[in-house]
Structures are given as C-alpha cells and as structure tokens.
Image 1 (cartoon, rainbow, N blue to C red):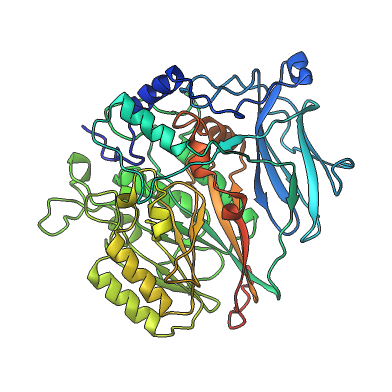
Image 2 (cartoon, rainbow, N blue to C red):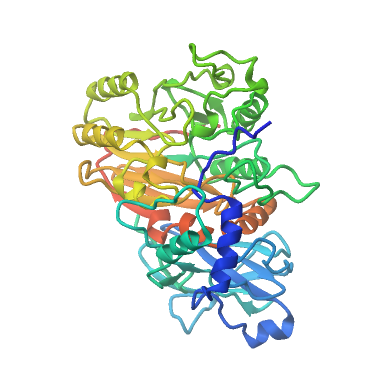
Length: 525
C-alpha cells in the first residue's frame, strides 16, 4: 500500500536530489568557505570538532552544540553517507568578556560524546561575551550556512524536472554566494521585557509519530534517514526529549501546532497523545492551568482513505475517514479557544481534506471573527499548522501553495489588523525557524518553529512578562535526540540547515508589549 504520509513536503524527491548532487558535483558546485581547513591539532589528534552552532541566546546565557568526527565535514552539496564517523570525547566551552581573555569554563555534563551540547549560564543581560568550543582540547569549527535566494513570487519546481532544471534551481538558491557562520565567536545576551515574569509557553509542532524515514518526500524512493537498528523510533526520541525539556525549562502550557502523527493512523495518534500526556492534560476549551497542553491538526493528521482507516468515522460522503477525533476529540475544521491567566489562546485548523497546502473555511473564519470581536484588546496568541505571511510563502521550498492559501491568508491578516490584542501567530509545517511580519497586521509576530522530529529538533519557549515576551528556540537535549539531530542535519545534500536553522534573531528575540492585564501563573505541576 502506498504510504499515506508520503506527501510532497519539500518539492524535490530524493531521486531528484541524488541527481542534483551528482550534477552539482560535476559542475564544480562546491560552495567556497564551507570547508574550513583542518587545524594542525585536529589532524594530529584525529578529531575534527565541527558544525558548531550558537543555538539559543537568553538574557542570562547561551547554548552551543557541535559534532566531533574522525574527518573534516564534506563539501556541500553531498549525498547521505558522506558524513564522517563520530568520535566520542569530552567537550568544553571557554568564554569571557574579552576575545583575548576567555577565562571562564563550562563543560558538558553527560560524559564523553560526539554530539555535544553545552549551556553557559549566569551571564549579565545585554552584555557581549566571546567563546570557543573545544573537543579534547581541539577548537570546533562553526557550521557554515549558505544564504538561500528565492526568486520573486517564490520557487516553482516543474513536474519531472531534468538534471539541468534541478541544477538551475540549486544555482538560484545559492546565487548570492554568501555563506554565514552559525557560531561567529561572540554573542550579546538579550534584555528581557520589563516587569514580572508571569508564565511560559512551549511552542512545538511536527512530531510525525509513526514516521520511519526522515526527509521522505514521496513514497517511491526510500530510504532517507532512518533510525539505527535497535534504537527507539526517532519521532518518539525527539518528542520525549522535547516534552521533558519544555517542562524542565519551566513551560506552564504546551501548544502543538499540528502533524501529531505521520499518517493519521489510529495507533500513531494514540501514541502521540500518550507522549503528550507526559507533559500534562489535554485541554481544548476553557481555562488552562499549569501542566495543560493544546493541539491543532496538521496536514499529516488529515482524513485518509484505505484499509488502515476504515474503523474511523466517515467524513460526509467524501469516502475519507477521520481518525483524529476519536483520540483528541477534535473534528476537522474546529477552532479551539482556551485562556491562561488572561491570555486568550486560539487554535486554528488550517488543513484541507487531501492537499498539503492550507485553507481556512468560511465557517471557521466566522467563528474566529466572532471570538476575537468579544474583546478586541485581549492579549491573544493564535496557532495553526500552515504559515500565513507573503514573506513566508515566497521563501518556502515547495512554493507558496504549500502555505496557507493566499486569499485566506489575506483576510486573516486583515482580521488581525482589526484586533489589536493579537500579538503572535505560531505555525509549523515548513520545519524551519522563521520570524516574519505582515505589512497589514504590523503588530503581529508570525513565528514558524522548527520541527520537533528532526534537525534542528526542539521547541520555542515563550516567556511572558508584564512588559512583553522573550522567545528562545531550544534543541532537544537527550543523548539520542542530539545524535538524531546531527544525523538529519545532512538532509537535502547537507543544505537542510540553510533552510531550517533560521537566523539568531529568528530563534531568539524580545518583543515589548503591554501585558499588565495578565496574571502570574503559579506552577502546581
């Protein structure tokens, strides 16, 4: 049976990408600056610390991740299997307030590993620090990320593209020639909003429970990246770590913006809920207390056809069966409205019956309009699976049709413009960290959060204060999660980080708002 989860999620199949890699290599398309020369110390010791990333920057610290291997990183683009073998060793970060005086030390707390994650804490807000990461005393080289350039109007990938067309697409994406460091060696900590910290929300999406091949674009060309035999399924590994990390970092409520499952099979949906129940209690209406979570539907959770779905309720006379309501009590097209200490949280269902792109039907839009009109100035966060803004649509690898339908996106932004209380719209679907704005709804942050299930693999923590909020993206921290994140950073010829990691400000930023009408949440978890 054809895998119902195998939707064209990124526009290019793996066969296309393999051909593209071969064509790119034949054309000499190795990006300058992506292969730093190995240091003498690295060559002498046989360890090559690489792919250093400055992932998270808060008001009091920062988090670095990197990988230690037996050889330098391969040139981009590269095919899977070319990443050098892992080397387990110690890891440390030297840092200080002057580049020539790195007199403080933070060490990894999980023993020798090739998949390093070190957190530096206890820093001053708004201060600049310098750092160097080391494996076995050898400095780590940063991940070098090419800047992608999208054509006006968005990327268009023809059906059954030729090698020449694929090479032209790659050349367009890499046409700027600009390569940026994911760890420039210095960082300035954020300055939090004024006033008391009231509560924190974790924003996550794209769990894909039940998936067995990461990066799969179509059903006819496996395999992609699969879990090492004998280890737990990677979607469970990543979701378990995300849930534990969100709780450990003080999230009162967890919002999951769709793709709870890989293919909306009953066992996958039940498995996703069992995992999310580790955070707390599902709540789809009314008051939220600490330890609650809310979900929205994604395109992978859509109604389906086939033998695996026939026990689930039928959707009208469409011939499709919808399995999600039996697990989450959330029929397709239903809007959720909850509130936390005065904050209104609205979950949208932006899915269609059978396409990966999104839509917002008239009935749900009318309900949303009525809900927002009840108090236009109430601080409001909206979340749903599909991104909204034009800036997002034109920079989506699969093209604008992959996001929310443009007419629906336009009327949604116009509604937000008439509702001053709406301050943030959280989406998933594109598997990337991206913060965009709307010229129509200028007071709203539109935040896409990278997928939980693969690189960079984590969640965003929204810390709400009386004077605004601070958003930080955290990679999942368990040993298996760190390993899987590094493995899947090689997706799409090693170009995946260029699309999904996002800029430092996409991942970490402060927004000033008047939240004095909100109350503090006292954790009772």
